[in-house]
Length: 182
Length: 391
Image (tube, rainbow over all chains, first blue to last red):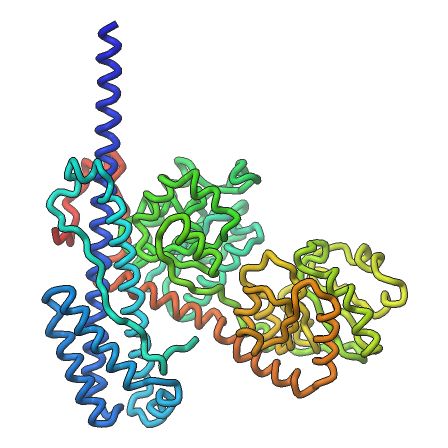
């Protein structure tokens, strides 16, 4: 009789072990996804600010707009290695400058006609859309990871190890209304 | 960019997802990208050059009906080999929740994975039953796309995940280039869709027809789509039978020519539509549209700016709209113009541009798609340290 208890206990231990191993695997996958989505967002943000600097130094905008744009693009790039909240604020500022620079499609039309390089505005639209998309994907990855990390067993057994609690990136990423296609 | 696309349903069986995958692949190839599709197929000889045989589908009872899906040891091996040899920058899985090649691909790959969900709320029971299974696949997906607001709601409500809305594409060119035939003396009013499916709304149009003929005695009703035309004509009062032409099921090019020949295209649907591709095809062909006021149609018609709308299932309102439009040539011209412009926004090249934005936002800084050896016992032992881990 007692042998059956041992077998039962053994099976239970194996099952719990399997579950824990699977959950640890899941967490590993989720953390990896956050890493990659964060890298992707980083790349897109840097591409956007680089493009803004390039545009500011071309003759696309009037000098006043160009100065403001260059200033906020510089600030955004300078904050790239710092705190995620500070960076979010700097990138939001850049977004606001872009929105103010191209508030509606008529402005975009005028700029397109006078532009030295007509592809530039399309590149800018693309960069803004891609920033928005990659931030959305990143925050969704964070949400999925948090969902698992909130589980009691995961917290009690510290299955996430020393990996810091994942944080979303908060910023204003509206593409300039003048550039949206639909 | 090297793009691997996974289609879950048999290539040689007609279906919305398959058509979507075909158009997507061909548009991306046209834009100069390297595309490979893996798909179940009954007859591998039917595959185009860019597609790979993922195995024969098997009929299994699933989700309340019989579905033709591909799974099992052989299919897994094929998907793994395709991923290993494909060297893709990004993997695009369609319908990741169907237990078919899509799920297998999610398990077999690591790296940037994009997935498109097509099915809408009615099918969501599966999500609950396969919740855990679905989660393990979904956790590896870097970007979810929904083709309609309904599909998006399914994802948000049942999985708690976010999805980007990228509507279905339409290949505008064949419709925009169609040459009108106009073999009828009077104005032509057209319907396209399954004639015997009540939700397509043909009965509403037939009820409205006497009212339209009363105002325009020369008008002709053109019916296109699968279904028994004789049976439909038998249900109509004798005096109206000569004014109705049944063209039946048409080829793509005939369909385009027929739509281009219409003075008005009517979509009297009474529900069950999540998008309205036919509307866009008609608009691209230059036919002014009169449609019932379904949400999906209102979106496509830009709230009525690109087509006329009438209260769903109301034959008198339909007749009044059609009569008003037939009386007003300049309004028709205006709708043709607005419709053509609207249709380009849904053209596959526009949609492919949106997809490329999604691909770029998940592949930036990544090293492409690799075979995932974790979870394979042998693979786990053979695994080298994963590259690029920052923690």
